[in-house]
Image 1 (cartoon, rainbow, N blue to C red):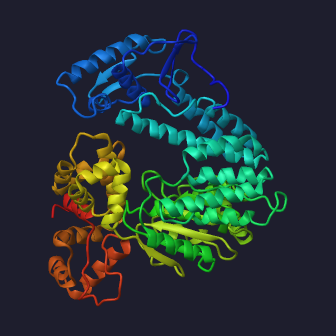
Image 2 (cartoon, rainbow, N blue to C red):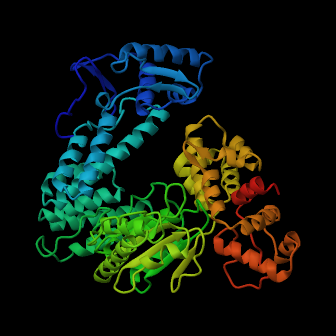
Image 3 (cartoon, rainbow, N blue to C red):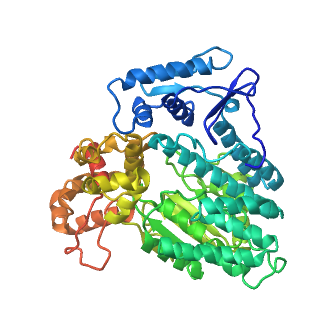
Length: 620
């Protein structure tokens, strides 16, 4: 934003820019892009480079309210004009714009589009920061920001479809600016970021990370009074606009600055990484769970409980809640917050040797090289491999004894996967997420995630499809979230799907979800599939538990089942039925009342979507 953007297109190639007004340049000369509707089509294709763009999306971008009968023919004309402007792709002379069953796809290389170049530089900068090369990270992130010339596509934002894409691009730019500013502060060069941060905070006053970086840059520049005033302005704005207080992390940053000069104590930058490593950024759509989040912050923040288990079925939002809590607890864990997945991508459990090696690499634990041999073995292989794993385990325990860090062990399949990883002494805390309740671990603090309340689920859906669309048919929106069973993943997938299918009435989509035979087919958005996640949880169950769940799912269609009905459906005695139901409760496949109640008086439930999947598999 402070220097002319670096153009990387080869001679004779068209270079497109979306990070500002839509422009195209050929050998330094700006090209005419035609009438507005043609530019809208081009902007939409460029916003999704090398990805099929459905005809419906292009139509909504050009004619959001009432497309003419000739809309498809007109689109073909605009796409033809774009082909002429773009010319052939690469050295093979292939068509730039191709049409297939998924829509129109625009082929374009990184050096021909500023958003692709921006993403590449940002990834390289973050990778450099992860290696500890802060100077290299600052340089690469700054180079990315030099491509940002203003609000993306600011000349076409009166189109709702283009405005949505532009908003996503601007959010990416802001995140990279925050990364760069925090890196400069950490390098001891806060003054270079002060003015730019002030301008961005004025445009995005509720963006907390941006404001925290501004506070830090002022404080490290010796302007403590101004830094404190920034916080006070933010506190008043939050109270006035949202009725909320600043987050615990922001309040902790403020307290660290009170009464301290610049040299008295350098406050940690308000960034996601404080210490050796940190979990990934929280999802922007995180919604609800106020009680569970408050409980997590209180339990882990007081330092008395060292292990917390957050349990719930696949798609319940366990990881999102854990990451949210980890970010808010930055000031309580000065030696860092680190997150490791305990399963592989295919859902199988990782070996203890693999997990220890990753923890060692992230936290700089001595002896952190991956042990030789077959790391797929639970104990790291035989002979020397077992010795290497044991050495890693001892080094990990020593590190935990000397540090105060929060370790998030995500998606734990069973107790055996984590027993050797929990701290035996010291002030480290461990936050475990698991589908089952891991009853064999003790002593631990347990938090079971129920389905989202209607209001929370509607808020999540509204974030994805827009509050206006939600208000237009609140009854249909309520049917959608209830058909999702209040499962956060299902609500999020519904929102992502509806955000693309902007022509689809909410009532029609609710009808589709109400159909038991079609609901799981509808809950797919791109490569995110609710059925796939539920199938992973299904595979975790023992064969006997799967059969029992299939029988009980048929009882749950009218809102739940009692022990007497379970006994009848399973064709067994009362004690066997109790054991069968409680085994599914332990596995997270059946929910039970939160308060104490006798087994006979309790009303048990199978989550709706899990029940539908059980019907599919068992033919019940």
